Image (spheres, rainbow, N blue to C red):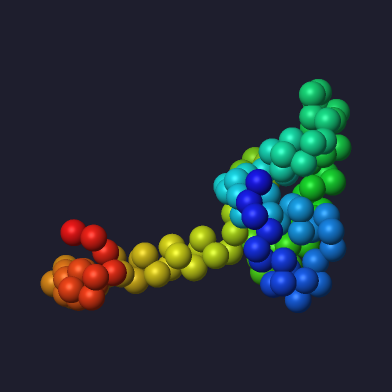
Length: 120
């Protein structure tokens, strides 16, 4: 499981203990579903009844995290798929960079290499 180095941030957001646990699983295992989170947190999911119960329980916490703008939720059939909002921010940055002219991107790479940020 991911190190809990974001505990100060999550405390500031007023997350309960279960919300924190669910959030850390999402950060560590994205994209994921409510049933996968239940398994990760040690819930019984061996049969369909247990899976439905776990799905309902963790869907509640996932929706609370969506309301707090920490995760993104997408519904596929009856399954809720979630990932951290931070990933969406990275995707936006990637899309912006893709739209730049190739010469501009090469100048950025060359500048980073000259500054020694990246090994050749």
